Image (cartoon, rainbow, N blue to C red; front, side, top):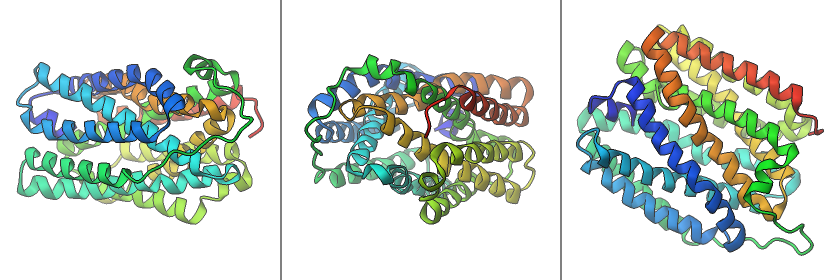
Length: 352
């Protein structure tokens, strides 16, 4: 997306603003989405989000400039992505046994990590031989396949005797969830450095490729989850979280000084190892601490943090790039992860 916007004439700050508009729309949609899932189930929400996703992907080739139509399409995509990300993740949590939930979320998350590699490489190939319109047509086909594959899903019933749901705001303000909202927002804001700006970093420096970075990133995370998904529940999720955050920060430090394609790959692998554990650990802690009848609301809040991170990180990191360059921006992302992690461990008291 950042490459497409760059081709339309947007600089890094404008790209960050456009990403933030999408994120803001997704955040506004999260409260009714969480309430709807807890009241009506997940399947209907997943199917509706899938239909919207197909339509939005098909609309991208109609975008010709940086005018209002781009913002309409991006806002609609924000709703589609928020719906699918939240509802599919909540449905996965419903299916998993509590004692292996972090492990299960990590393994399920491979279905999100693997496309980072495949789509990065596929995008590079498509753009070598075609245009962004061709890329969006392929995206539409994948969106349609996703919709068709989601049709057989069925809702999981909550067992009798569960505490009643109190609504979205109650989950938002639950005391033992507040530290998770904080560290999740820190994590999500830092991720903007790679998901929004690695493409323009490659274009500006000529070093490596998007496919190279995200292939190393996703392979490292997938290997970690396939071989060691059991570790967080064996040693304790919070004990495993500290080195995961540290590895993500190391990846950004290495990316700040990268001058060769191999350095890009190493940085991607380190960041992937950090992401490989951080996301399922935080997800599992959210599900564990939230009431089962508020799981949709809690998951909506957690996934909204990634849109909030883009909302904050897009313009902020874009401005840092404009003023002092990509190296300083990646170092700032590393510092954010390190300081945010330290603050989380200082204030989070529940034994996990």
